[in-house]
Length: 303
Image (tube, rainbow, N blue to C red; front, top):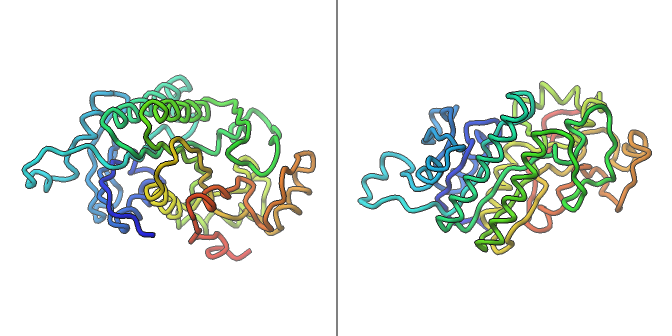
């Protein structure tokens, strides 16, 4: 089912994921305004960027009622709030800034975006959470996963500030969804892979699987993330939801059960997994949203 074109405000669209997600959404007929501190990297894409400090609630409120480009002035009407807000902007990991600034910036920005959108009557909000919330990616030393597969009902207990900020964002989303009755979907996004990174990185990812343990041998192609966002736009009426946003398969040569038995023998398996199912499982988005991956890593790298 193709989604009717929506007016979307997208935060952080100039980043690693957004620069691929926004073109996908444009191809689907949506109109997108990018809120970022950096210009959109592809000047030919026709994406207007409004430079916005999301930690300033006044700027956020105003940005959500701003024209999408200069042609908006020709309509003769003030810009209404968007149909959809997609919030990807954040300090993207630990150690970009001191921990307290990472926490303050990420939590404040997410609060401001969700609050402004909800109070302006936006019925669909999508926010970026993170694989790091599963607690191993930025743990101190080698720590065990509780169980496999990693699914949305897992007890996520990270050690680090970045992941904590993302869990606070999810709780903020749940709070406002309950208060305003809108749909707010949190995407627990796996390690984002851009098209050029398959040739460069997957020889190591596949042949040295120990390097991928902190990412649970899982990933999300940035273009497939665009599909997930579009599917979230299509599917309404779910209230607050958490969805793992990953591709279908594990980044190893061996089938999943065989690999986990060898590399994680002490970690329990809570259900039968598909032959090459990613340990950070996307079963929910396949079953609830109808996600069908287009960019399996094996299309781009032959081990």
